[in-house]
Image 1: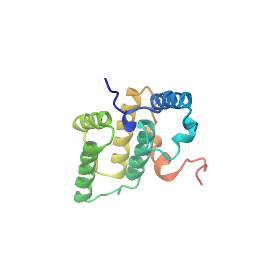
Image 2: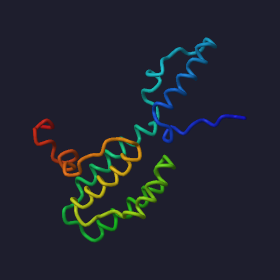
Image 3: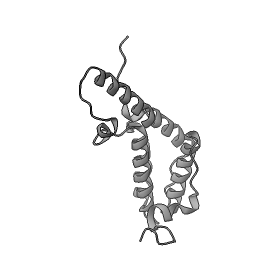
Length: 154
């Protein structure tokens, strides 16, 4: 039975790191390249966790700069973006989950506030599934657009 190489975007970092450590240890035993796992991680394709984090940052930033009063075309384009995005997201498990979420809760594109709040709620659905803390959606514009009120982003 041959083991298929795991999809980096479908494997969380801890699992991937464990697989890399096992591979590294086998190579060391054979006397091959002795670079560390942490060195090998630099300049590598994103794993599932890295991809997810960077994707959420992009999506939240995009929503933060969406128009307050979008045109009908902008609203339609944004809805289309999320539906198309869900078809091509590299992690097939995440993509399928997003497609289900979009059927249950379609993108709310009538304003920047609506889109940002909708995306925050969607992100919190994912956070709950991953047993991560939820984000307070009242703070979404401070986090992704205006910066924190304490001035720490200035």
